[in-house]
Image (cartoon, rainbow, N blue to C red; front, top):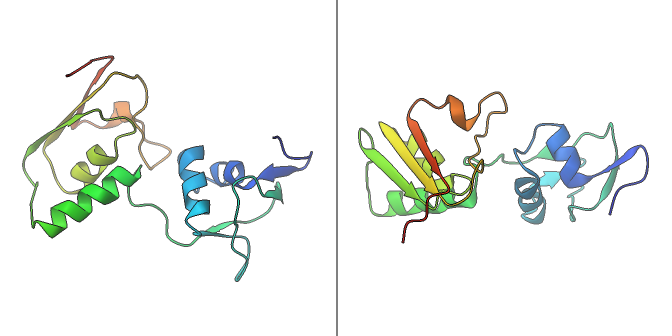
Length: 144
């Protein structure tokens, strides 16, 4: 459902303000209670309507492009695994949460394989998946 003229949905406003890389990430931030429209006003629904010039605040921006990065980081920390200097393979890369985590933790290179195309994301808007020199992508590959 579209917002009224001069107003925007909270998830779309987060994208406009470059506070989230994708609408699904914006929705996840809102549902996790990490978005505020004022000091004590938590945004509760992605569809909540705001003026186009409203200011939204993200309490803690995501460290990785998807929750997969958070999960992998937890496992690497728990098992005390260092990936620095290694080469990585992300089969079923999707948006690249594992890839993002491993690149941030110092892998030398990543090979990303997925049956889909153009799904990999990077947090910085000025950077695309094609600009990461340590990454090789293979799209439309089915590995079973």
